[in-house]
Length: 218
Image (cartoon, rainbow, N blue to C red; front, side, top):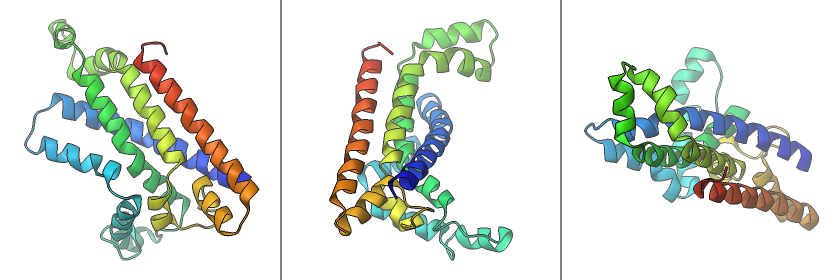
């Protein structure tokens, strides 16, 4: 049970982190660089999973992507498959919970870049896309790396939203936190303690690394 749950957790956390980093980097850059109506409201919406109970976020995902959900029903009719209780559901739940960490870290990192460096690149004829990839992303790399690390840790420990959208199916959608929950219910204290220790160790390593990044020692 533990090995299967660990494998699923690593697959889910890796996929969710990759999606969150790509999406969150562009969102953070847009929030930092592009003034537009409703910008702070959009930032608040992307930050909601940080403060909402995970089960509430999971319920919203179920309403949106469930078999008869707002998007779930059209997807089922068009493609013939449903998202809930699948590995994809685990990835979606973990991505939604991890995304705010990347968005907030990316926004702060891009806002801290000296505008003169961007203006210098623009004065040399660099287009917006080239300035983004060649100037802004390298300068913001520490913040982006910290956001990615926190997103991975959050995705690895995700429980409530995953349970609501993906269920707890051993060998299919049962991640390590869900296996820990089941082991606790069934009195498997040794297994539960091992899983707690594994998740705690990962969290400590991530926090130490993020702290090192913050001190400028990657």
